[in-house]
Length: 69
View (tube, rainbow, N blue to C red):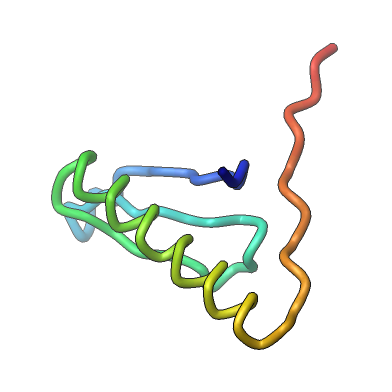
């Protein structure tokens, strides 16, 4: 199981939920018409990014850790 971040925000101008995968860079994004669709699309893109990096023998980015005070 991976522990990567997924940020989901509503984009009122496009009327979609935008999903960002921050550990993978500024262009690792997808979207969905519903929150549930956005989550599924984010999980699908994340799986493709991991698979692609693994196939090319590239290291995976380290997951972000939530800092507690």
